[in-house]
Image 1 (cartoon, rainbow, N blue to C red):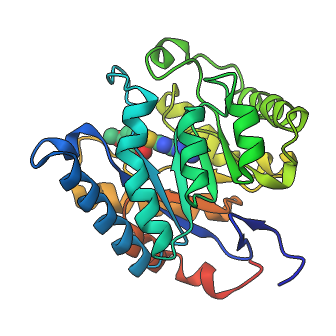
Image 2 (tube, rainbow, N blue to C red; image 1 turned 90 degrees about the horizontal axis):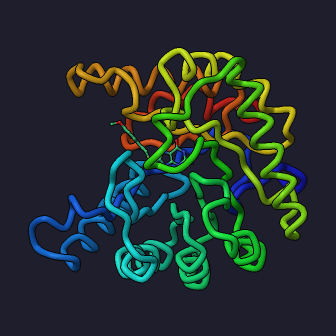
Length: 271
Ligand code: YH5
């Protein structure tokens, strides 16, 4: 176990499950912010009991057209949740594009920074992330959440996403972040059409050449318009497909079901 690779301190000798914890305005609608914090903490604790290796706490909606919030407000949303879950023994990931949020979360125990903009939104993010000591997820997203819809035309989506991620890895290394601290993520559903997502999943093994663990977020992004059961089945099927293609970490809403579906893989260590 000594020379096995790790991410967020966790050995990567089996696929890891990252449970999603949102602290976004929808959860504020009744009961205010404290209620939203309690709900999110409860969700995170449930993920842990269900077998999540990591909990990913986010306070900014990256849906197209979402209203931006200040870093101050984002910190107010996520920090009590990060703090409570870290104290409860969780490996916490902070899902943010903002340097001030990264710094605040890492200072109270977040071990992973998950940035859908691969540390490109704010100039300070590279330096803050470097100093935080946290491991970092670099995700591909063309443009910003507001513009990504207009920017998704690829000749070879796998190649283009790989070139982008290679560039962000280089930017991290230049900022003093060792490659060993990085994971890469093709960003399923972010400025991509159905065909692009299919090609990325089919070609996921090519991302191995980047020399970093691969994280994927496929949960509930497919099977739209279908019922919740069909959507869950589709998420699970995609998760297994991703693991077969070399995914190391799965970011999911349905932790218990994903852990159960991965059991075969979980048992054969070393895959
Ligand atoms: C991701 O892929 N995704 S937020 C639309 C949906 C369902 C889910 C309605 N943060 C990722 O989860 N971080 C998000 O259908 C992420 N990778 C990483 N690293 C979007 C999301 C979602 C969007």
